[in-house]
Length: 81
Image 1: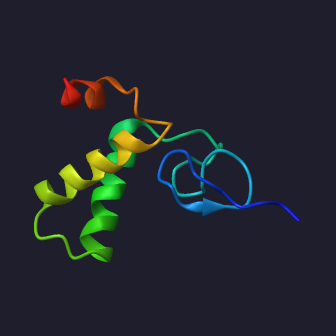
Image 2: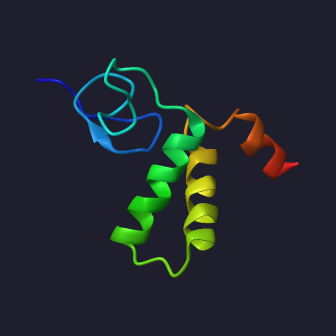
């Protein structure tokens, strides 16, 4: 039996691999940063009833900054500077 792991892009529990099906394109490659950010913002607006796009964007950026796939992304590094 495989031990569950988490997607290195969003933190979702996955059976195996590095990224979940929501964070990859049709070829299995990690989505571009802006695409992943936009999708996370949409998800937050639906799932957590976040009040505004800007609030959802800030929450998504904070979450992405903790994920191995994104923590060294220039846009996130600039936020921490």
